[in-house]
Length: 273
Image (tube, rainbow, N blue to C red; front, side, top):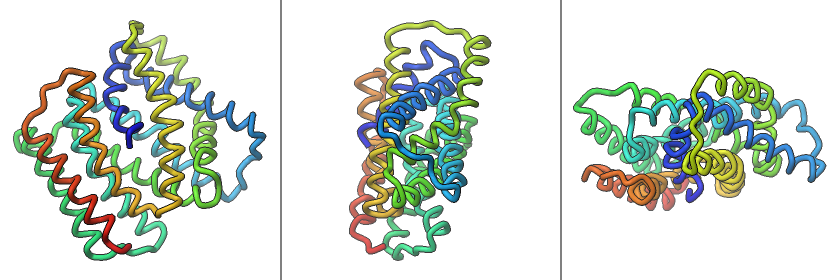
């Protein structure tokens, strides 16, 4: 969660130097090169044919879909607002996991998860004057594709090491992302500065590779539904970074909503799933 909590602030920094399409494409390309180096050094064999479909879901969800949609959202939404909205991710991930794996968490688990989701929805409507903004639509779309990628990645992490799951998903996207980088960098302006470079490096290496490696390893160890609820802690950390790194002024509703969903973590972790 520490690695993921820095993703939105780092993305905002990255947007100081790159356009949204360039940032996402270069981010994925750099992460794929790092993953490829680890796979080569470890002499890791190619995954079995039956695993490639799952890896494609991971790639579409967490390598392409979530980074692109959240980056587009952060052009109009504040980091603090986006952080609280993404608090819905645990619920969507648990729902995908229930359908995909056939496991059914307890009623207490679902009650706590839905309660956290309701808090986030109310916060979103309150902050946007009762209407859903374009940025919120991007964020809600990001939740769906990311939940699918998390669920499938968690399943695969029981069959192969977590770093190989995200590693091969990144390699699968490398040709498209490399081509996308070449095109986007010629179309969108590039204004390099320290914030932009640091932001790019972090979202590529810290969030995309390292963060997902330990995340999938954790999901394999304790199960997708329970692991997904730990992400309810992410908004609180991101709110902290938004103030310290970006100088944002938090609306009172943001920390209140973040604390409310954090309470749900204790309940879902105690609930038998």
